Image 1 (tube, chains in turn brown, green, blue, purple):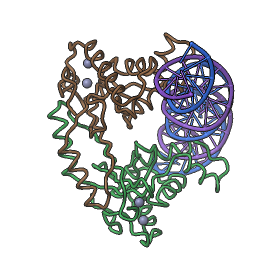
Image 2: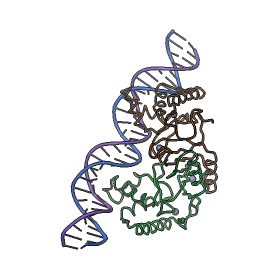
Image 3: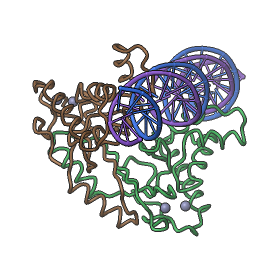
Image 4: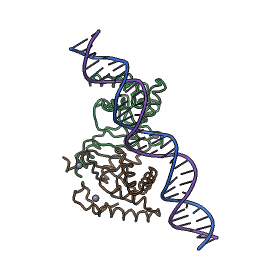
Length: 162
Length: 162
DNA sequence: TAGCTATCTGTTATATTATAACATTCCATA
DNA sequence: TATGGAATGTTATAATATAACAGATAGCTA
Ligand SMILES: [Zn+2]
Ligand SMILES: [Zn+2]
Ligand SMILES: [Zn+2]
Ligand SMILES: [Zn+2]
């Protein structure tokens, strides 16, 4: 899985053209859904767009608040169903330590990932480091666990915030 | 920080004497609190004991249910205050991907850790692997993040469950 | 094209996890 | 034994997530 080409693996330059960033993510999502024979409905598209609106993790109820600005009958299941769909199709990730959601940079297939989170500005970078993943898998096995999935979330300070 | 001597770094032998396991954790906690000049009150002790009751993570409201069996006026703040205290004094950990709590094997000081969780039996082993921690810190830095804390939680199958 | 079926959405209610706020009790120590 | 900070009791509510069922929609097939 190659990374979306418009993003570097580092924290986002504040000046990068994020509209293009979002547009590419949405267009990628559309392709993925077509390949998977699943429907990329308006609600799903809209929720993905809201999530991609920044490179920060967003809470489910903040997505709900945004939806309600344009659709006054939005309720929690609307959001959680879209989130389930997007998670199942590997278009977003859930950040466990924040109960928050973020767009996937390597979207469309299951893949290893590690998240780097700036505690000051909340910006997130997604790593896809095989060396880290393999070392964890190996050490887990040394300790008896046959690993199926790993959550790696690193909190710290990004270059702009130090 | 050395690990509690009665535990191996592997998944628990079903036959290990878990009463001794719990007793040692409680006695260690008492020492830690004395060293830190904080009070190891009955409630805090009782919550820690409930958490240590097994090597599985426990939910806050399951702790509350157990407390209520012996104290009918227990309420959520009772549990969460004890959890905060135990977390602050490094006597337990929170497992982010499960919203659950587990006793710390290397208790009493802040330290690196990685959790290995069997999805079948829910038993957890705590690793304290410096190689993993350092690699993650290094890779994070390569990507611009100065790491302060890392969450590493691995889901898989333990030897008894494969 | 009409009808069928699975999927998606709307809606209401509720479960689960966690904290705020303030009153009361406890306890170390002066 | 007075007193002030810490701990606990109590009530209320915030924040996150799911259950259950009714109604609408889209894509397939007769
Ligand atoms: Zn962007
Ligand atoms: Zn930052
Ligand atoms: Zn034990
Ligand atoms: Zn197991």
